[in-house]
Figure (cartoon, rainbow, N blue to C red):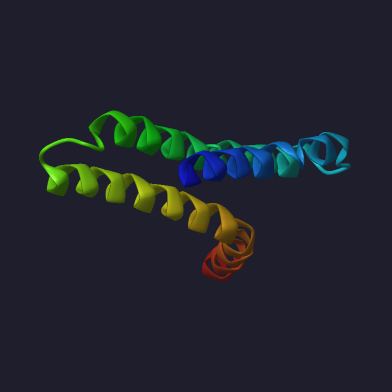
Length: 104
C-alpha cells in the first residue's frame, strides 16, 4: 500500500507544475533545462513502479536475501534520482561559477 501511495505522490509532484512550466516566460535554453530536469525526475516514479512490480510477485519467495537486496537497490536508485533532481538547480549555478573561474 505504501508503495502505491509513493508512486501516486511522485507522479503528482511531476504533473502539478506542468501548467506553470508551459506558461513560464523564460529563454528557450532555460525552459529546455527545466523540461530535462522534469524528464530526469520522471525516473523516480518509474523506479518505484519497477520496485513494486518486482516486490509483489517475488515477495513470498524462498530466497529473502536476494529479494530484499534487489528491492533495496531499486529504493536507493529512487532516492538517488530524487537527490540529484533536488540538487540540480543549486549545482548548475555552482558548475557555471567554476567553469567561468577556470576559463579565466
